[in-house]
Length: 346
Image (tube, rainbow, N blue to C red; front, side, top):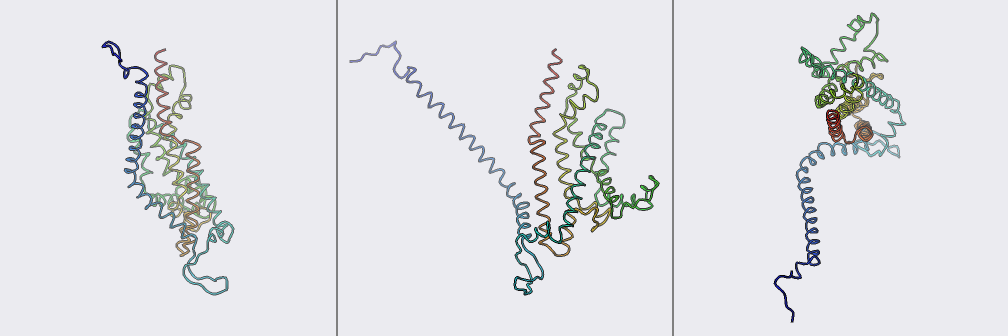
């Protein structure tokens, strides 16, 4: 016969008996947290599904349709037995072979070189000029609103109108030759035509980089600069150690957008110089020329190669220079503020 005293704890209340219950509670908590996370992921996928569906229809389907078109050729041709074949016929990678090694290889590599040259030159110049514009617009002075509006005017002008404007400036008896006091054929086929396109493109799109960099400058706290001045940092040191690192995320976004835009350049050289000019012919222009001559398979091959080129450069840019630009901006700003507080406390 077992007797239980009123003052003694029961077996259910001992630590040995409570341990399994605690483990079950922790397991249930983990299962609940995992279920909540899984439910959150399902809800996020459900909310994003309309956007992903639209992107698949707007971007995915045209890319696949363009690649499929690049595997075919339209028009008259000869089959393996020498008979005339009309309509659409499957040529496999024949269009790509003709681009890289066939009769269209010279035009392709010329357009590829022009596209790369315009991208590197214009983006580099626009970055330097855009940062300078942003630094000027960020200063406090009388008439700052007027200066900001005047700087952004070129970006607001349509590209076709900008091309016509610069065509008038670069003509034989235009303002450019009058200022230089030389007779340069800017709008003819040659290296001056390249320079004309670069000047017009830099003039038009530098304000875009300046606007994005200005937005990044306005997010930098002023106490960081005050602490740097207390430590004896000059203007150049403040720019290299504070301004440039903190504005890097916005600058990377601007440079990425401009790089993707220049790689697809078509309207400015077409209006300023003209089509079928070897010195300014880009990949987009040569694809348009093939399509206008009803060679849709070749045009689709050019477009596919350009798409892969743009995708590769964008991936390398984001991977090497700033994969997490938003997180990097927050981390740099937070670190700068903490450093300023520590200096003030000291």
